[in-house]
Image (cartoon, rainbow, N blue to C red; front, side, top):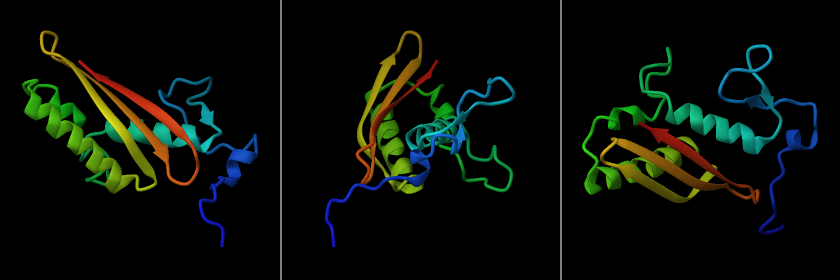
Length: 135
């Protein structure tokens, strides 16, 4: 039995097999497809974090609800809670995604928050970074 073996997604090796949809939905037709698992996971994370619970019919718990934090006071306790909330939701809904770091940058005067999530995909060697801004 091999230990530390790197997992390879079979569709990543086939150039013409689409895996998911790129965001935003403004492609030549309606959307552009993505062809790598790394890009599909990033698009799924973006979709999850920009969706509020209750927006998807048939799946009322889907969504991180980050927009609800827009009108909260930008204080250290709220930012700490938001960071813990993001890490917990990724751990729950994306078990193959390992969060390396969550960085929150805020501007109290403009009431905006910039979130950077650095993550890796378990057993694949894939690393990526997701940036979200709420103003």
